[in-house]
Length: 424
Image (tube, rainbow, N blue to C red; front, side, top):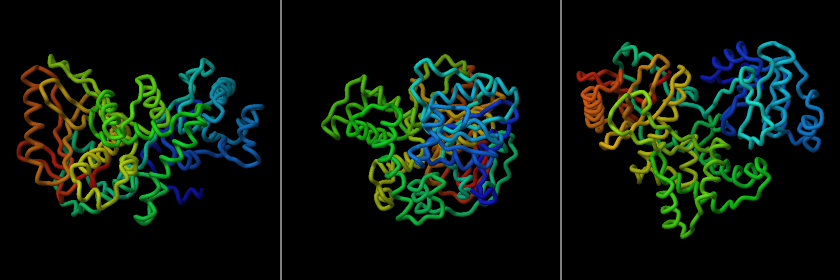
């Protein structure tokens, strides 16, 4: 890779800080999200354990003589370290021995089963999560509006330009995969489907060495796609599979498959926000179901542009997933976290951004501008209710919209921001 061709990512700053602070860093995340490109940009030498050359010679060397793959100019990239799980301990030991910062960059697209052989790496190896590209990283958001400027009440109203429904649908279908940028619709549409087939037919066996029932895994993945951006329970998913497929998956298998999908970074559920509110209201703790990128849900639903244009309800959930993918990336680049909120009084907040300093913002996500008033009223009502309960209220209220030409602050204090103008 030529460094001048590198497209910057928001985790670049985290990578640089990690190398200055720790002996090694591990960049983990879904396949094809850009981990290797980013790592090569920051590394001075590299070895690829998944390289099939010479009958996987690099992998064999790592197994038989780990030191041979550790030697090289630093930072040294060890790509797909999970191919030889013992390399983790070898790196940890080498970091201790050298006593220097920025020695290694590990990348991993799966979390291996830990059977007592892996040290945590605490203090030596810092883990950084990487996701597919946000719209700002891929150049599809103008970046005119900073998320931080909203929290600091510094947003200046401006026209951000029109974005069509057609363009939004195609962004969801394409996803945030770096390899899809610049490709025509007919090409980028098939990449997520190929991704899922590769994971089911090859990666799961390579991770575990066990032949799993790919049919049942596919049934569960399709059910998760049908429930994208919802808090569907296990019982709801099982009922859906039985109704749609006429099949049943026992609880142990169900749990095993969900864990596998997490270990392969296919799913990226959004946790519930409840720990910091100090509210007397009972908070629901179920996570919101998400794939790591909404394009995977589109592929599993076998949907194309016309399908989503004619089913705006389904597309609404997928658009919500796109926005929450980006909000999570932006929040984490600022040292914050993303959550969702539901309570037993039927109050919901699509997304909650909590910053390091404790401030939090409530975000509603709407596809069209016609829904802005309703979303704003919902946010104002929740804030008012929390204040009445002496709970911690949100610092900012924001409606993230798909098809609006303006970013501004309403008279009632609610911000309106197009997702295609947002950055950290």
